[in-house]
Length: 399
Image (cartoon, rainbow, N blue to C red; front, side, top):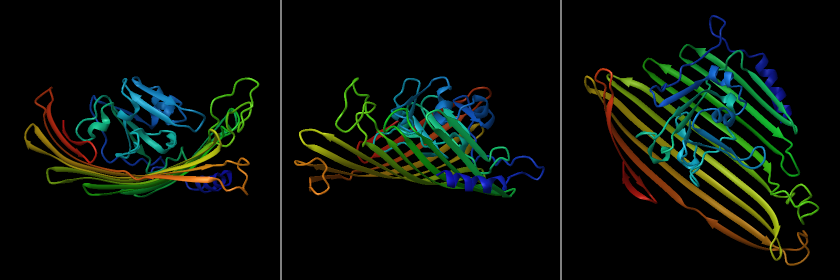
């Protein structure tokens, strides 16, 4: 991992991205949010906060509670104003990243250096986002072009903590730009079997033609961490652990990849917007323990999600606007558990234990449509909203 970081750094140091006047290139976001319901943190706000991770940044936002679970590199979730973590919708470039299995978004695999802006919606997400946004919305906007002053970042901490972030970007023309970002992080952990490491990259590009803008990206990251379990009682030596950890074998691995495509434009008096996304997330877990006989378990959970959303907004007459939208989400889980039990010499490779395999493959599809009318006469704004959702498991409901 350090070798890759060194190579990327060498490339980036000789690849500055600047505008015609020698200043940094900034490409405007596809649809900037506005209004009293939104809190927007741009790059200057992020730098002023002094945060190194997304969790640290959100923890300083009033009303948001961030929970870090387990050892370094473990699950990091957020909730807003007392709502549960699975009621906060987290998106990257307008596409949700909440897991289909539990509705929670893991923030640990999202390095803060990737994003040029963090958009936070206070309260219920509204028609566009559906029931998964009861506790609010956080949208993370990735950087498309590199800044000349932000090509490389390095963070060091105790217990062997190392964080690297690197970027190569180009402004190809006033209408187009791209960036390639890579990051890695390592931590030796605070006790036995608590080390962690992750590595990933993201590619983003943007093209603007007249009144139409297209933006796309692809990301992939992997993470591995030890799971030491609770600390043993003093003087106790667990069968598969040490004085520092109940297990020296338990570990967890994750592999995730995603792709996103955004469109925003205008046809005549109609504003159009569309988001398409695909995400694949694999979680593997290994554990060794003794019930009556020594047992090993290997579990694998592969979740594949497809997402699409499109809406149009136009004025019926002054000052009334109408928005019509449609959204779709399809998720599939492939779960497998292999449990091996030894009734002879524990874990002897010459002994063939008895293996039991359990598999499960549920699916869920959801289709939603919404209609919103908004009027702004003078200083006041009034709106009426209707949303209908049809879920493959929970049926139809109206908001």
